[in-house]
Image 1: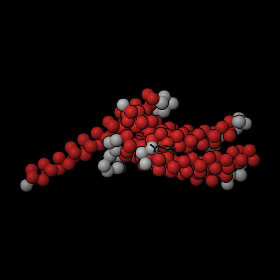
Image 2: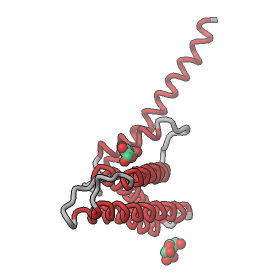
Image 3: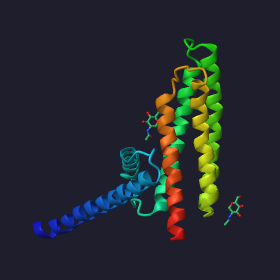
Image 4: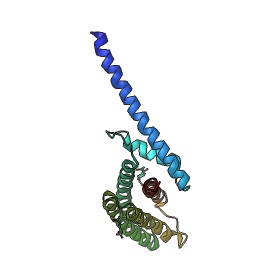
Length: 186
Ligand SMILES: *[C@@H]1O[C@H](CO)[C@@H](O)[C@H](O)[C@H]1NC(C)=O
Ligand SMILES: *[C@@H]1O[C@H](CO)[C@@H](O)[C@H](O)[C@H]1NC(C)=O
């Protein structure tokens, strides 16, 4: 009886071990390729961001399409997060007028960027990968514009880290879409 119970248990444990190592091999392989194609993209960041999100996905990601979907969703939830950080900062009375103005622009840039992410999902779902890549690069530009608005006056940006993380998540999505396009041609 004991034996009969344990065999399926062992099978289940091995099955999940295999599944999760399989999916993280796929993530690390894809992130390695992505960071080679697009050097500003950090391999470690890519793996950490995707593994954390996909660890509770069933079934785990096994295709580049899956990874595009996950990374765009990650960028979306992160960008939404940044928007709420900005609206909190806007209520902070310690910032000068110039910084407030930049924060207000950044709020608009992020709204626009999130809209682009939605449009990119539509293009991606209709399998128009070149259009999806174009739109994702517009989304990326928006957070660069937010950064630039502070840099123009050498003001320290209160959104430096947030911009960096969001930018990197956008770049991951964009690079995966470009990898899909290349694999398709090959
Ligand atoms: C993809 O989208 C672009 C821009 O809207 C369009 O010009 C092109 O024809 C589309 N390609 C396909 C394969 O649908
Ligand atoms: C998402 O956004 C928050 C706030 O900017 C940040 O602290 C967090 O590390 C980000 N990470 C990911 C990968 O979601």
